[in-house]
Image (tube, rainbow, N blue to C red; front, side):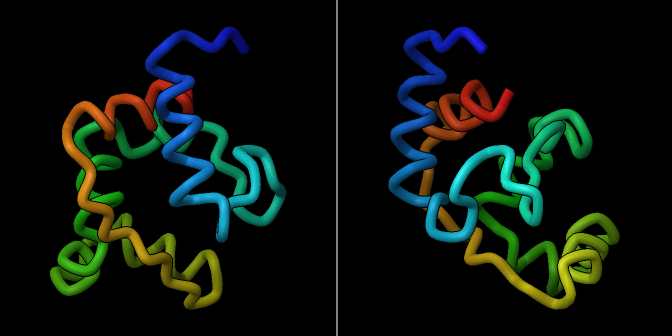
Length: 93
């Protein structure tokens, strides 16, 4: 993987905010491969910033993720700007 400026900024954010639950992008239990493409960028941005509202609305994708990971809920209510979300997506790609 070639890191550009945006993906390096995303890596910094990921390490600061996500690495407690996701020690790496490839850890087996929380494999993040394809995490951008499966739901799409707009959905992932919502999930990272408004997971609670998606679960409250019984969003099928969000509730399925909770079921797949045995009820483990993340704390995805990050107050990221749109630029910061784009950096994280660049890193996750």
